[in-house]
Amino acid sequence: MAVTTNTMMLRRELLTRMIKHLKEGTLKENIDRIPYIMRPRDMDPLRCCVYKDRAMIKYRAMGVMGFGTDDEKDEMTSLSEYYDRALDRKKIEKEPLSVMDAACSACVKVNYVVTNMCRGCVARPCAGSCNKDAISFYNGQAHIDHQKCVNCGLCQKNCPFHAIIYVPIPCEEACPVGAISKNEDGKEHIDPEKCIYCGRCISACPFGAVIERSHIIDIFKSINSPKKTIAIVAPAIAGQFKTPLHNILGAIKKLGFDEVVEVAKGADVTTKNEAEEFITKMEAGEKFMTTSCCPSYYMLAARHLPEVKPYVSHTRSPMYYTAEIVRQQNPDATIVFVAPCLAKRFEAYSDPYVDYTLSFEELGTMLIAYNVNASEQSEYAVDKTIDPISRGYAASSGVMNAVAVAVGDKAEIIPVVIDGINKDTIKELRKFAKACPGNMVEVMACEGGCVNGCNVVANPKVATRQVQELAKHKYDNNII
Amino acid sequence: MQKIVVKICTGTLCYVMGGSELQLLGEHIPTELQERVEIKGATCLDYCNQTGSGNAPYVLVGEKVIESATIAKIIYEIKEQAK
Image 1: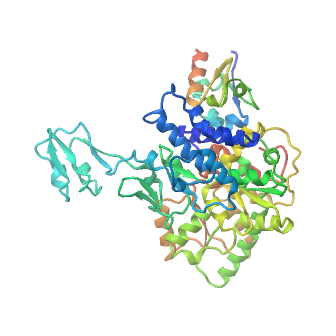
Image 2: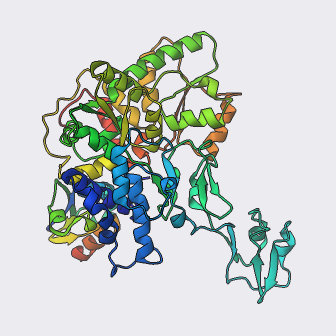
Image 3: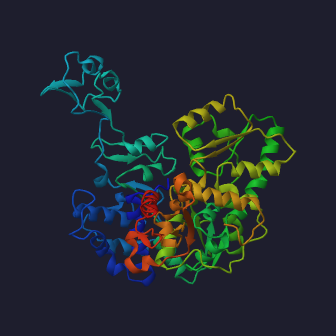
């Protein structure tokens, strides 16, 4: 997902600009100017005109301040007013995604389009094969009636000139569970009952129309209050910058966090509990058990795979255990989970100990805005009690490896790894309820694991190498 | 023959703005040029402070600065200099 695109760069530029002002305490007076600075009148527009570009930046800026597009009741409300509201709020709305409908409407309603290559032939197999009578001819070419077409694709299959093309709707193709679809106006809408928070639609939309509610303002409020603010950081962080882990964690601390704790610490607990649970379940004769730490998979099982749900482990995620440990020692602190993906942001909403989530992308832009170089040598002392194998949770097979070592010879593990949730692997998982090819199933929603989460900054291939290398050895300050 | 030195900026700004992908450069250099090229990391080349964040990531190929660097752009420049 970390293939660099313009929408991604725009988002990161906006985040950096806003955070710079937040840091200086000058956001309120400057925020309404940011869309104009980013898209001046003499600049080539990305959309139809700079005015629309600016309007979309405004919605995006609302997202950065924790609002969804549905929160807009009056179009005249300025960004500085939203900033005031963000400062006043006690808690943030839960549903993390919304669609900027003005940015979205660009996509087709019907996937099949007759191109100019249509010769208007005599045989007309397109019209002959259409069961819905959706094809008519005028001006010597075929035309598809959007009201009648049901996207079956028969016309395309039968056209002898290959004149009919399939135009995908990227967000709908990317969504593995059919949670994003068009409303009667042709605008995409995310069904909160179906969404599993995998974040694919955010990366897939070429117009960047899906926006995420950020907690940045709330995190800043906490950092600047007398309250202690503690960052707990997901294992995938180790691959996000080209520098050893202790430098990255040290750089995070420089952003104003009172403490920075590795979530690998909680992964130690997850490994132990999951191994014990596995042994108990196998002794009790259960067919198989699946991991539970990827919240997107957890939601998939809960909302779409009732037959697999009973096999999901009851062990909690590394985030949960880490936050629990930190909370016991710091009952009044604000706990910020630094996460690679949207699913973790969703999980944190129902976590009893985590207050806010900061995505890797937000963290990266925060480092830029603060002029903190992640590679700078740091004195940060890495927690030596953490089992290095726990740092491997961030890559596919990482959880399986850790649990297998913990189970040892107490039970026989026949591993099955589902590397990435998509329409095919969902079908495969559904079959497991009847016949599972193994007895321990690891599922991660993103191909390659958390290093490929929707909010990462580093190339997943580069990040995977760093994470896997780190998981092999006791912590050494020289390993990247 | 003198080697063409490629310095890839791994400063935070370049990395966040898409620079991490450039770490894979080594795998993409054509076989016939591999002997001619030496890839080095650089903590921060400081170009970001000179021109603003819009043009990161930065890469130096020999003496030439590549803005908004991509693997394709770097290889193109290496080929030019190898002529």
